[in-house]
Image 1 (tube, rainbow, N blue to C red):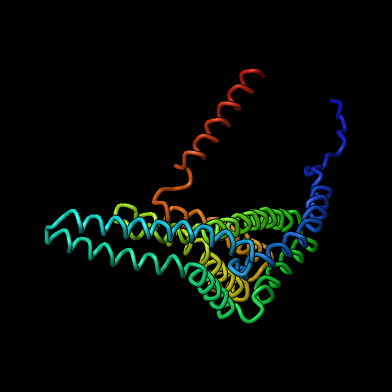
Image 2: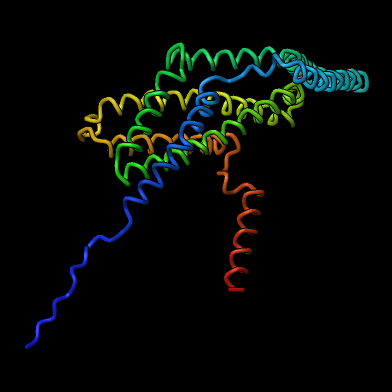
Length: 297
């Protein structure tokens, strides 16, 4: 019987080292810029009311709101003159109270927005210290970069996942600042709708949207503080300290931070983002395009 010697074959001929090097290089190139951008956005909200351009737009909105106050008052006077019923007078008195309250809020809208922004920034500083971007963010970024450059392919992939999630956070905060700008400009009109019972829901929606967009930052600061403590005490999770556990904690932390704005959206509008008409239309278009591409292939 002839015995044929087969050449020895490695059981792991996969290019793991080149792949790890590519991921490490990519993450090391992108991570510093992403971390820097996130540090500038995540921990302090700019006082938009101090910009002259925004003040001008808000005053134009306020002029329209004050014009509505005059119309409401004329309507109340007309109702009192044309109706002699006692019940109508009591209704007008209640409506006048709402009008004056709404007018006061509308004229103080810049002060309200500025005070809420100052409160949010003060709470973040109280939670993370006088330099919020340094206390927790520096530690998280240092751990990500150390694990990426010194670890294997798994550590590099977790660092890459963290980079992707932080990019989402940066995009979310850019959108948040734009939303706060729009809400600040329309604040007088939105607050003035409190004068009309049938439109008071708009005022309530404005309060909820502004509070959710603004104080989302406080929720993220709290999550970062908890995440830093977990990294320092992994035994709280019933496990020992390792680069894998630290990487998973960071990825989980960023994932929850990305999910928080969507939960706040559901609280404000009482339906998930997936039920928004624009989102549903985009999903339908993407599905149609994918089906057509598969059929063409």
